[in-house]
Image (cartoon, rainbow, N blue to C red; front, side, top):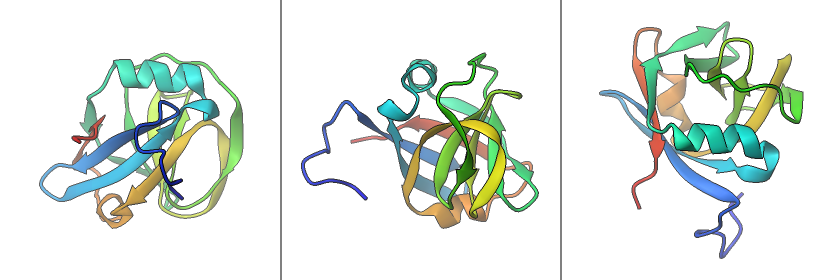
Length: 131
């Protein structure tokens, strides 16, 4: 959960994950989880592509960014955001899952339902949150 007084923190970067024509979810990237990965992603925002689903475990978009493994893990919870190095994708988990190794990035803080209701072919845009 959000700590009081961390709104302007450089360790937590607020982003928006928008599903075009459906709505937007708020999220935070937590820099200490994967500083190099998050730095590269933030430099390249906004990122946009068509939504893909992996079984019923996560929704993802390909970024085209080449980033290697960094502090990766295999256990994720609903609402977690991770980076899959094998296909350069940002993944948002819609249920708890044990999956292949991914770089942990952060967490969706509100409106996860918007991402859960997305369908393949929808357009997802990952961008800096407007203040």
